[in-house]
Amino acid sequence: MSKQKENVIREQRTIEATKKNLMGPSGKFGIILQAYGTPVIRQGTSLIDSSFLEDPFEDFVETEYSSTASGQRGPMAYRDEISSADTEHVYNEGLLFDGLSRGMHLEIVYWHYDSRLQVSYKGYPVYMEIAGELEAYAPTDEWENLIERLAKSGKEKLKSLKKQEEEELGRQIQEKKKTFLQRIRNKWGV
Image 1 (spheres, rainbow, N blue to C red):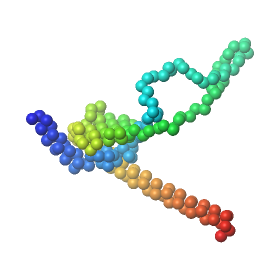
Image 2 (cartoon, one colour; image 1 turned 180 degrees about the vertical axis):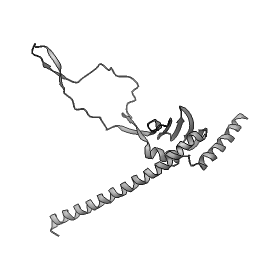
Image 3 (spheres, helix red, strand yellow; image 1 turned 30 degrees about the vertical axis):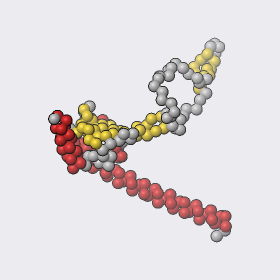
Image 4 (cartoon, rainbow, N blue to C red; image 1 turned 90 degrees about the vertical axis):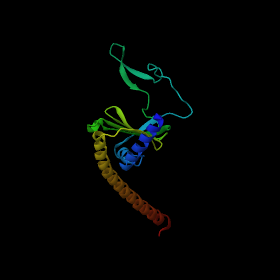
């Protein structure tokens, strides 16, 4: 009997979340993540699943020390390495919005692998959706007003970003036309 009551509540909350346009990555949460979210990146390969820590004291880089006037080894002069990150195996795992930088104790996370959308307010989960199925929704005006404000400003930001992308695309097309015409003129004298 309790499972049936939970399903009835879930259905009512799903209807309410759909009316408020919260459901799915195209809803208000998705708008906020697209406008203000930062990507969650994982680095590694799918061939190796390592779950151990490497030795932090192990260092395979040759170090050069400069000699002092007394003949002792002095401070490090340079390290024989090129510091760069290996971007060959970088995977985008999802998107994260952390509202603390805006004075809001609000967090929105979207994971791509299972289409999980999680919202936490003041450290408590207030919304969770997995693959379009609502798992949790605790509506209060306090956090929903923050979502409304963020979604409204997020729409404006996305519009301006889209306009900038269109302008940049137009510039790139014009540049390609110029280079094509210049190449034809140089090659064929037309």
